[in-house]
Image 1 (tube, rainbow, N blue to C red):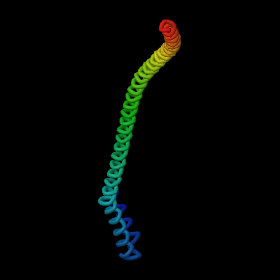
Image 2: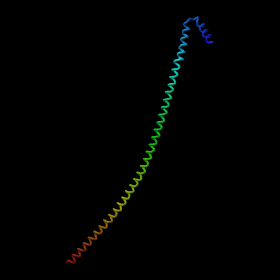
Image 3: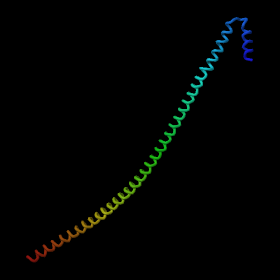
Length: 147
Protein backbone atom coordinates (compact mmCIF):
# COMPACT_ATOMS: atom_id res chain seq x y z
CA UNK A 1 0.00 0.00 0.00
CA UNK A 2 2.85 2.39 0.82
CA UNK A 3 4.50 1.56 -2.50
CA UNK A 4 1.29 2.36 -4.34
CA UNK A 5 0.97 5.70 -2.51
CA UNK A 6 4.54 6.62 -3.33
CA UNK A 7 4.10 5.64 -7.00
CA UNK A 8 0.89 7.66 -7.20
CA UNK A 9 2.69 10.66 -5.72
CA UNK A 10 5.53 10.40 -8.26
CA UNK A 11 3.04 10.16 -11.13
CA UNK A 12 1.10 13.19 -9.83
CA UNK A 13 4.21 15.36 -9.52
CA UNK A 14 5.93 14.10 -12.75
CA UNK A 15 4.24 16.59 -15.11
CA UNK A 16 5.68 19.52 -13.05
CA UNK A 17 9.22 18.28 -13.18
CA UNK A 18 11.77 17.16 -10.64
CA UNK A 19 11.84 20.41 -8.62
CA UNK A 20 8.54 19.93 -6.71
CA UNK A 21 9.59 16.39 -5.92
CA UNK A 22 12.88 17.70 -4.48
CA UNK A 23 11.01 20.31 -2.39
CA UNK A 24 8.72 17.62 -1.08
CA UNK A 25 11.70 15.39 -0.28
CA UNK A 26 13.43 18.27 1.49
CA UNK A 27 10.25 18.96 3.49
CA UNK A 28 9.99 15.32 4.50
CA UNK A 29 13.71 15.38 5.45
CA UNK A 30 13.12 18.47 7.62
CA UNK A 31 10.20 16.76 9.34
CA UNK A 32 12.33 13.65 9.93
CA UNK A 33 15.19 15.77 11.35
CA UNK A 34 12.70 17.56 13.62
CA UNK A 35 11.28 14.28 14.82
CA UNK A 36 14.63 12.53 15.26
CA UNK A 37 16.85 15.29 16.69
CA UNK A 38 14.96 18.37 17.77
CA UNK A 39 11.89 16.86 19.46
CA UNK A 40 13.96 14.62 21.81
CA UNK A 41 16.22 17.57 22.65
CA UNK A 42 13.19 19.78 23.26
CA UNK A 43 11.64 17.05 25.43
CA UNK A 44 14.88 16.74 27.47
CA UNK A 45 15.00 20.52 27.86
CA UNK A 46 11.37 20.53 29.04
CA UNK A 47 12.12 17.73 31.53
CA UNK A 48 15.21 19.61 32.77
CA UNK A 49 13.12 22.77 33.30
CA UNK A 50 10.53 20.75 35.20
CA UNK A 51 13.29 19.25 37.35
CA UNK A 52 14.68 22.73 38.04
CA UNK A 53 11.20 23.94 39.05
CA UNK A 54 10.79 20.89 41.31
CA UNK A 55 14.17 21.58 42.95
CA UNK A 56 13.24 25.25 43.42
CA UNK A 57 9.93 24.26 45.00
CA UNK A 58 11.67 21.80 47.34
CA UNK A 59 14.24 24.45 48.28
CA UNK A 60 11.45 26.95 48.99
CA UNK A 61 9.65 24.39 51.15
CA UNK A 62 12.89 23.70 53.02
CA UNK A 63 13.45 27.44 53.56
CA UNK A 64 9.90 27.81 54.91
CA UNK A 65 10.41 24.81 57.21
CA UNK A 66 13.66 26.26 58.58
CA UNK A 67 12.01 29.67 59.01
CA UNK A 68 9.19 28.07 60.99
CA UNK A 69 11.71 26.17 63.12
CA UNK A 70 13.55 29.44 63.85
CA UNK A 71 10.26 31.14 64.72
CA UNK A 72 9.38 28.28 67.09
CA UNK A 73 12.84 28.41 68.70
CA UNK A 74 12.59 32.19 69.05
CA UNK A 75 9.14 31.88 70.62
CA UNK A 76 10.47 29.27 73.05
CA UNK A 77 13.44 31.49 73.97
CA UNK A 78 11.09 34.45 74.46
CA UNK A 79 8.82 32.37 76.68
CA UNK A 80 11.84 31.27 78.75
CA UNK A 81 13.05 34.87 79.08
CA UNK A 82 9.54 36.00 80.09
CA UNK A 83 9.44 33.25 82.72
CA UNK A 84 12.86 34.25 84.08
CA UNK A 85 11.86 37.93 84.05
CA UNK A 86 8.69 37.10 86.00
CA UNK A 87 10.76 35.18 88.58
CA UNK A 88 13.19 38.10 88.91
CA UNK A 89 10.30 40.56 89.22
CA UNK A 90 8.80 38.37 91.97
CA UNK A 91 12.08 38.28 93.88
CA UNK A 92 12.48 42.04 93.44
CA UNK A 93 8.96 42.59 94.76
CA UNK A 94 9.74 40.50 97.86
CA UNK A 95 13.02 42.35 98.36
CA UNK A 96 11.35 45.73 97.90
CA UNK A 97 8.61 44.80 100.35
CA UNK A 98 11.28 43.69 102.84
CA UNK A 99 13.13 46.98 102.40
CA UNK A 100 9.91 48.94 102.94
CA UNK A 101 9.23 46.96 106.11
CA UNK A 102 12.79 47.61 107.34
CA UNK A 103 12.49 51.32 106.58
CA UNK A 104 9.14 51.49 108.41
CA UNK A 105 10.67 49.70 111.42
CA UNK A 106 13.64 52.07 111.42
CA UNK A 107 11.28 55.06 111.21
CA UNK A 108 9.23 53.74 114.15
CA UNK A 109 12.43 53.19 116.16
CA UNK A 110 13.63 56.70 115.29
CA UNK A 111 10.27 58.19 116.33
CA UNK A 112 10.39 56.25 119.61
CA UNK A 113 13.97 57.36 120.26
CA UNK A 114 13.04 60.97 119.48
CA UNK A 115 10.13 60.73 121.92
CA UNK A 116 12.43 59.25 124.60
CA UNK A 117 15.00 61.96 123.92
CA UNK A 118 12.33 64.66 124.23
CA UNK A 119 11.18 63.07 127.50
CA UNK A 120 14.77 62.98 128.68
CA UNK A 121 15.24 66.65 127.79
CA UNK A 122 12.09 67.56 129.68
CA UNK A 123 13.27 65.51 132.64
CA UNK A 124 16.71 67.13 132.47
CA UNK A 125 15.15 70.61 132.35
CA UNK A 126 13.05 69.81 135.46
CA UNK A 127 16.07 68.32 137.16
CA UNK A 128 18.07 71.46 136.27
CA UNK A 129 15.38 73.61 137.86
CA UNK A 130 15.40 71.37 140.93
CA UNK A 131 19.20 71.60 141.18
CA UNK A 132 19.06 75.40 140.83
CA UNK A 133 16.39 75.54 143.51
CA UNK A 134 18.50 73.28 145.70
CA UNK A 135 21.63 75.41 145.12
CA UNK A 136 19.72 78.55 145.97
CA UNK A 137 18.36 76.98 149.13
CA UNK A 138 21.77 75.68 150.11
CA UNK A 139 23.26 79.09 149.44
CA UNK A 140 20.54 80.74 151.55
CA UNK A 141 21.08 78.21 154.34
CA UNK A 142 24.79 78.76 154.10
CA UNK A 143 24.30 82.53 154.39
CA UNK A 144 21.98 82.08 157.37
CA UNK A 145 24.42 79.78 159.17
CA UNK A 146 27.47 81.79 158.40
CA UNK A 147 25.90 85.00 159.72
